[in-house]
Image (cartoon, rainbow, N blue to C red; front, side, top):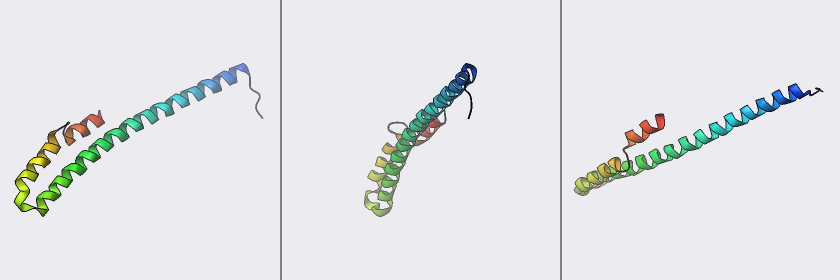
Amino acid sequence: MLVATPTTLLTSLISSDSSWRFFEDQNKHTAELAERAGKVYDKLRTFLGSMDGIETKPEKSHRTLQKARDHWSTGGTLVKQILISRS
């Protein structure tokens, strides 16, 4: 059993507050990272889907290749998304 004096109680509360803020910030950053990772995943999935179309339908490859290029470059490139997430 510990006896809480005003000094030890205040120190404990300040320590708890600091820990709480740290974990709150970590959760916010984790959520932002998860959102960016989701965007990167969606863009990559769409791009790879277009590339699959090139392999399975050679007669439509030019149109499918253009579609893949469009997915790659619209809304910020995959490389740009990755670079943004690192900053």
